[in-house]
Every structure is written in C-alpha cells, then in structure tokens.
Length: 112
Image 1 (spheres, one colour):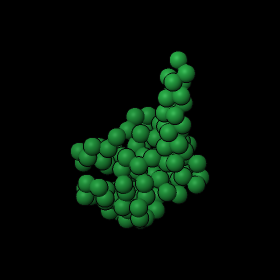
Image 2 (image 1 turned 45 degrees about the horizontal axis):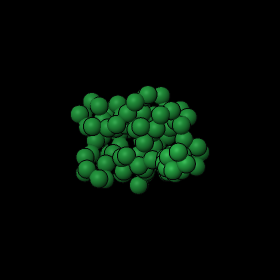
Image 3 (image 1 turned 60 degrees about the vertical axis):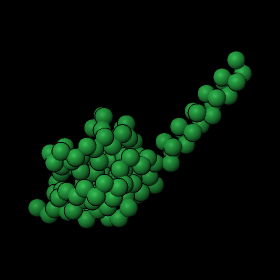
C-alpha cells in the first residue's frame, strides 16, 4: 500500500496517510486536532484548502466539482500524492453564504 506525506501548512504537523484511508482517520489516530462533525462529506467542518498535491474524494457531496479541485473534506479525502493542506479554509460558496447571512441580519436589525 502506498502512503503519502500530508503536511498541514499553518501548524507544520505532518502525517503519513495510506491511499486507502482518509486524512481525518489518520489525524484522529495521530492525535492531531482536526475539526469534524458529520464524517459523511456534507457539513464541511473538516474542510481544508489543497495547497499542493491531489486527493480523491468521490463521496464529498458537500462540495461542487470546482470546489473539490481546490478543497478537501478530510473525512472523505484520500491522498493520491504527497499533500500540503491549509486547515480551516472553506470553499467560496460557504464563505459567501456566511457573508450574505451577516449582511441580511444587519439589515433586518436596522429595519426593526
């Protein structure tokens, strides 16, 4: 079985992950504090930006095809090469939703 090095760029933590296991699974086994919630590729809590390398994540239903090229859901993603990931980075669709929600909330409060 082929294993790849996964480096988390903001913390410098590095783990070896087999192509047959998820990045989140190895993080939990190694004691690395990786955020997660649903573990089924929907909630995006475990999202990380792919700085370098490739993953396969066919069950990452929470990402669009375009987002899946730049972001990994660590609960679903398995490495295809050595990786550099930036944890806690979310796809633009999530960031946009949060910004829109904040603007709507502020507008609603001003109208009251």
